[in-house]
Length: 151
Image (cartoon, rainbow, N blue to C red; front, side):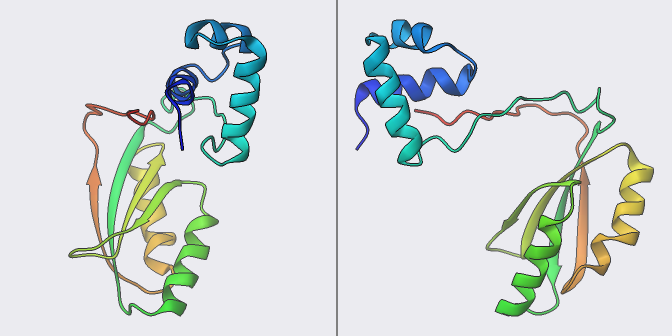
């Protein structure tokens, strides 16, 4: 069970993953050693999955964000496993979620431009195991893109 101090630590490190232990302890009202121990426990218990740098996709030639609905031709365990393995091997695919509703998966892709997406769709996505139909949604503007969980 999380304490209030644990929640304070998690809230701060979500926003500033490179913060020093001393500064984290100061902001959370803890001693440096108590803060370090709590942070270590939170990592060991799986509350903290890792630390990452957020990169600018435009500067890295990945300006176009696309969401894709994927409808499978069969919904069997083997098809799902094969599809998941294919998705995992594709660096363009940032996220893939099995969903309930009118389609089976929602995929988030980052590519250079529409031509790069057309090639990805035609040469890769439609040939993945079990894919029957796709619907593409190109993002015109990112209104909100938050990585922090509300605590």
